[in-house]
Amino acid sequence: MKADTLNGQLDPLILATVADEPTHGYAILQRLKERSSGAFDLAEGTIYPALHRLERDGLLRSAWSTGSGRRRRVYSLTRAGSSALEVRRREWRLFAHAVEAVMG
Amino acid sequence: MSWLEDLSGELYARGVTRRDRVRIVAELSDHIACEPGCEERLGDPRALATSFADELATAEARGSAFATFGALAVAAVALAVSLITLGRFAHYPGYSNGLSTALFFPALLGMVVAPQVALVAGTLAAWRALRRRWVTSLPAAEIALIHRRARVALAAGFATMAGVEFYVVDFSERLPAWWLGLAGGLAAAGGFGLWVAARTLARARTIVSGAAGPGGDIYDDLPVVGSGWLRARPWLLGALASLAVGLALGAFEAHAEHSVLEGIQRGLVEGLAAAIGFVLLGRAIGARPAGQSTDRGTSRSE
Image (cartoon, rainbow over all chains, first blue to last red):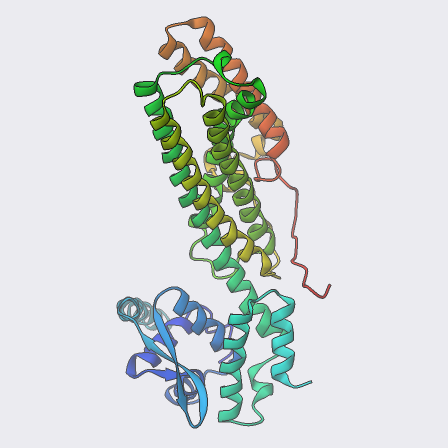
């Protein structure tokens, strides 16, 4: 699935991935790939502007940690992020249900 | 040159601050360290830097528009308190009783004309930012329009606060010390708020967006005047706006002073000032259409 197919859906996918546990960019990407069985074929760099945007919007927070001897930025969900994720989940289920009903 | 060095250079060329550059490069460095050789899958460093810069420029432009509006609100309170206390408790001394007309006229322009310019430009900047708050990457031309509006608003705000200070000096021998201290202090506080907003705007303007698209104009912001007919006749909008300002403020003056003659005088002056403002600043604040502009930002290296 190409990046443009994901247009508008990357943000909630990232929120859903981070919701499990605080983690860093590379791990977020790996989880996205694993959970989608490799369906999401996006340029890996695109995840970082999205992470920064979600943090600016107050949906994620981040902090430096030192893992594997390297500095890495670890992201976690804020309270506003949890609420936004729930809203997007409901919207997506309604949308998916409607598409399924039409497409069969 | 390595992928990370390319990325860092591209971010620098787009005016991304050192703090943000260091963070972005550190995150991507960690990503590459997790899986050496994955640079190709990260994408083109130029495209990634553009993506970061476009989003940052948009966020900073919005922030600077809101900061400008907030600072103007503080300045407006400073002006209002000064004028209300002057009228109620300190008594207006009459323009001919000041130290010098060289002080009085800048004070008059600053306290009467500049606030109107600040109100219009600041409101338009904040309204555009608010109206487009869900857009992650605004076109460079639209970001430039927000910047220009904020710049005009801040300049007018500074002129307003300077006008109050001129007034304080002009009537320093006529007005009570408590009022001089109050008005002077409030104008200084208002000026400080504007200075903070100006710094926010200066920081925002360093980031170069490369997103193509039209900047838009006042007809996009105010759909009520957005007919194609009026858009094709921008000078008519200027004339109508000047007439409306003249009539409104003339009627206000006539009512306040119980004098039709003073109302007509004030209305003419205000209408003329609005027309001059439209001619001088109309294009800067998008009140006059700028044509089919699809300005793109220019990088530092260009």
